[in-house]
Image (cartoon, rainbow, N blue to C red; front, side, top):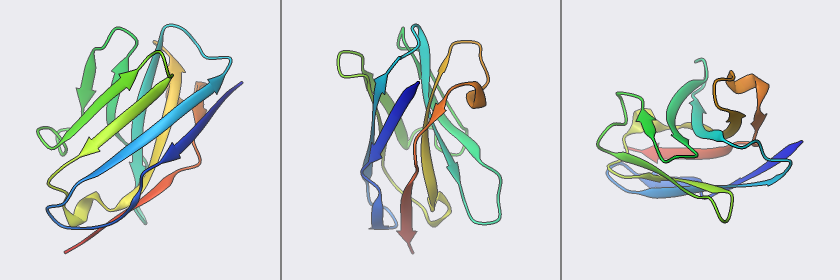
Length: 119
């Protein structure tokens, strides 16, 4: 079992920045994909960004050029640097880790961290 602990959410004004962190512990799959998802009120959870063990990344179109995902494999930690935040980025952000090729629900989820962007 893998445990994920997220931190870094909060309240920020539009145009501001936040950095989310997610530390994994336990029986970690290798290789793996670590990702950030978000869920706004009344909406389905959506993928924000993914980073693989080898460093490959992908992003949702809505965050390209504003968000950067990175990871520290030695610390089993993934980060999400969020710049130029918009009100539509307001959501609960969840960290996920899964074996490469598996669906997210086959992996483990963090507890979620609230990001609120005020306009």
